[in-house]
Image 1 (cartoon, rainbow, N blue to C red):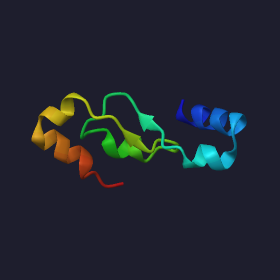
Image 2 (image 1 turned 90 degrees about the vertical axis):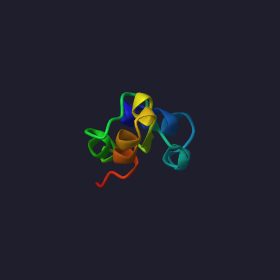
Image 3 (image 1 turned 60 degrees about the horizontal axis):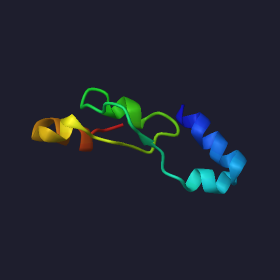
Image 4 (image 1 turned 45 degrees about the horizontal axis):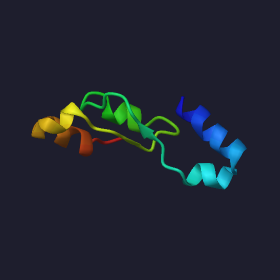
Length: 66
C-alpha cells in the first residue's frame, strides 16, 4: 500500500517530491509490531492511538530498535 502511494506521488509530481513526503502507517502500532512496521519500505512513521495511553506501551514504541 505505502509503496503504491509513493509510486502514485512520483507519477503525479516527481520522484524527488515522492521521496521527500513522509508516509505514516495509520494502523495499530504496538510495541510488538513497531520495529517490524518501521523497517518496511515506504513507511516513515506511525500514528499511535490507544498505546499512547499506557506509558510502558508508548515507551516500547518510541524506543524500538531496527
